[in-house]
Length: 93
Image 1 (cartoon, rainbow, N blue to C red):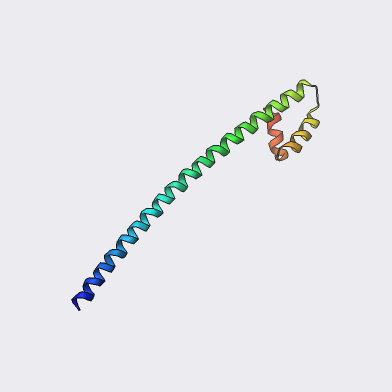
Image 2: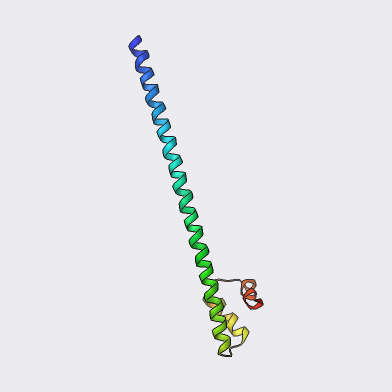
Protein backbone atom coordinates (compact mmCIF):
# COMPACT_ATOMS: atom_id res chain seq x y z
CA UNK A 1 0.00 0.00 0.00
CA UNK A 2 2.85 2.40 0.82
CA UNK A 3 4.27 1.80 -2.64
CA UNK A 4 0.97 2.79 -4.26
CA UNK A 5 0.79 5.98 -2.19
CA UNK A 6 4.38 6.83 -3.05
CA UNK A 7 3.72 6.11 -6.73
CA UNK A 8 0.59 8.24 -6.56
CA UNK A 9 2.50 11.14 -4.99
CA UNK A 10 5.21 10.87 -7.64
CA UNK A 11 2.58 10.82 -10.35
CA UNK A 12 0.90 13.87 -8.77
CA UNK A 13 4.22 15.74 -8.62
CA UNK A 14 4.89 14.84 -12.24
CA UNK A 15 1.45 16.14 -13.20
CA UNK A 16 2.06 19.39 -11.31
CA UNK A 17 5.39 19.89 -13.12
CA UNK A 18 3.75 19.26 -16.46
CA UNK A 19 0.96 21.70 -15.59
CA UNK A 20 3.47 24.39 -14.60
CA UNK A 21 5.46 23.78 -17.78
CA UNK A 22 2.27 24.05 -19.84
CA UNK A 23 1.34 27.32 -18.13
CA UNK A 24 4.85 28.68 -18.81
CA UNK A 25 4.62 27.69 -22.48
CA UNK A 26 1.20 29.35 -22.78
CA UNK A 27 2.52 32.55 -21.22
CA UNK A 28 5.50 32.58 -23.59
CA UNK A 29 3.19 31.96 -26.54
CA UNK A 30 0.94 34.83 -25.46
CA UNK A 31 3.96 37.14 -25.20
CA UNK A 32 5.16 36.15 -28.68
CA UNK A 33 1.64 36.69 -30.04
CA UNK A 34 1.44 40.12 -28.44
CA UNK A 35 4.82 41.08 -29.98
CA UNK A 36 3.69 39.89 -33.42
CA UNK A 37 0.40 41.80 -33.12
CA UNK A 38 2.32 44.95 -32.22
CA UNK A 39 4.65 44.46 -35.20
CA UNK A 40 1.64 44.02 -37.50
CA UNK A 41 0.05 47.21 -36.16
CA UNK A 42 3.30 49.12 -36.73
CA UNK A 43 3.54 47.80 -40.29
CA UNK A 44 -0.10 48.65 -41.00
CA UNK A 45 0.47 52.18 -39.69
CA UNK A 46 3.55 52.59 -41.90
CA UNK A 47 1.64 51.25 -44.91
CA UNK A 48 -1.20 53.71 -44.22
CA UNK A 49 1.27 56.60 -43.96
CA UNK A 50 2.93 55.57 -47.22
CA UNK A 51 -0.44 55.38 -48.96
CA UNK A 52 -1.37 58.85 -47.69
CA UNK A 53 1.89 60.27 -49.02
CA UNK A 54 1.37 58.55 -52.35
CA UNK A 55 -2.17 59.89 -52.71
CA UNK A 56 -1.14 63.43 -51.80
CA UNK A 57 1.73 63.31 -54.30
CA UNK A 58 -0.63 61.90 -56.94
CA UNK A 59 -3.10 64.75 -56.37
CA UNK A 60 -0.35 67.38 -56.59
CA UNK A 61 1.01 65.89 -59.81
CA UNK A 62 -2.43 65.73 -61.39
CA UNK A 63 -3.17 69.33 -60.39
CA UNK A 64 0.13 70.47 -61.91
CA UNK A 65 -1.05 68.87 -65.14
CA UNK A 66 -4.23 70.98 -64.88
CA UNK A 67 -6.44 67.91 -64.50
CA UNK A 68 -9.82 68.68 -62.93
CA UNK A 69 -10.76 67.68 -59.40
CA UNK A 70 -13.56 65.37 -60.54
CA UNK A 71 -11.19 63.44 -62.78
CA UNK A 72 -8.58 63.26 -60.03
CA UNK A 73 -11.17 61.88 -57.61
CA UNK A 74 -12.25 59.25 -60.15
CA UNK A 75 -8.62 58.23 -60.65
CA UNK A 76 -8.02 57.96 -56.91
CA UNK A 77 -11.19 55.92 -56.48
CA UNK A 78 -10.05 53.58 -59.24
CA UNK A 79 -6.54 53.13 -57.89
CA UNK A 80 -7.13 53.08 -54.11
CA UNK A 81 -9.79 51.42 -52.01
CA UNK A 82 -11.17 54.61 -50.46
CA UNK A 83 -14.66 55.84 -49.72
CA UNK A 84 -15.95 59.11 -51.16
CA UNK A 85 -15.64 60.61 -47.67
CA UNK A 86 -11.96 59.61 -47.45
CA UNK A 87 -11.26 61.02 -50.91
CA UNK A 88 -13.04 64.26 -50.03
CA UNK A 89 -10.80 64.61 -46.96
CA UNK A 90 -7.70 64.72 -49.20
CA UNK A 91 -9.13 67.72 -51.03
CA UNK A 92 -10.07 69.50 -47.80
CA UNK A 93 -6.41 69.70 -46.75
